[in-house]
Image (cartoon, rainbow, N blue to C red):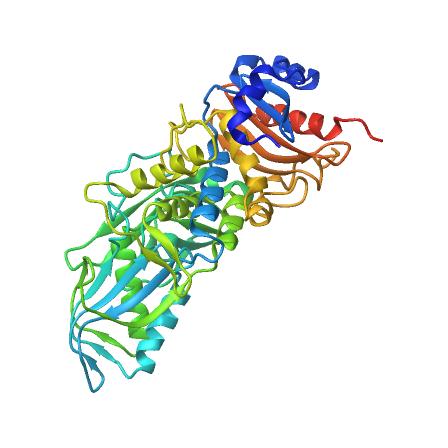
Length: 485
């Protein structure tokens, strides 16, 4: 069997390969006024190319780039890999007092939540500690820079949306506030979860006569105000329908504020006292472990982010490729640092080394964060096809394939291709940006043979479902192809 090293040769010389798009695909492109050269497509049955249309040209893949992050992570970190969070201290305990600093150290734990923090702090209380007579030290130093969100350009007009959250190594609740918005005919009440020490929610929203289902049309970016005593008020703005109740998750607070105030509220609720300030710094060299949490294993995490196309989880795993290695006992441990090298650069090097080791030419590949939430990431259909072929040959092929949405069943493919023979048979990662639609994954043909399918369209004309319809037609064509014996 030919390996991915021969893929470009196959595409150039295979008698079976066609550069012409299937008629249903071409017709939909024509109807939408989308030029055919805006699309790249590749279909492989085994190592035979059935279709290759501009397949060597790098395009923006949107969230299909998550497939690269997923497979490299499974192969490099392994299926037992887990992120971890630790409470540590070098201080002594006298009676019920920890006589020094408490360190909360992040290790890219994608499952670190308020509930987890409470259990870790309860473990401190169970050890007899009531007062922390020192500072709370937040250690995010696993990633370089430790705060990749600072100075990052705004991706779109919704910086508060979860899809745009940039992870760090010590992110709790993904830095989200869940707002419970309820209105009568006269006022809007707003409550936030979790409760944060010194943070209040106030509404300046205007009540309007509108359908509750379209409430988001009136949402405006909230103001975050801090007074001279450090109290924070989140002022909600815009309009909200009368007699309406909705919940909305938003990323509004600086993550230092968020974690500091969540810690203090939780510790106080457990009867604890924190005497000192909260600082961000690296852990001292000599500390002992007081409490810990490990995330679910990597296959569970990649399934979560591929099915739902979760950018923040995918970005965390991508950064883990540049900062962590698997540990069979504790789940993961930090790699030795490389002076001057960012975590993103190190993760990119890991991906490129992985591709080259499998004969996949990385020329033209552009990686920014590994999630596809990017205007600059690029990959060719040939390269993506090589990744998908490698996925079939990987030791962790079952974990990789099972992370993909199933057509007409779940994830981002739940409502697609229900009337196609691809329904329940195709496993495809989707990708969508304002001017990008893409699919990549596996489709069984009419004979039940597994085919690799990649389709990407970069065009301003893909809106109103037109681009998605083209890609669905490609998948449907593959599912109907072949001769049934």
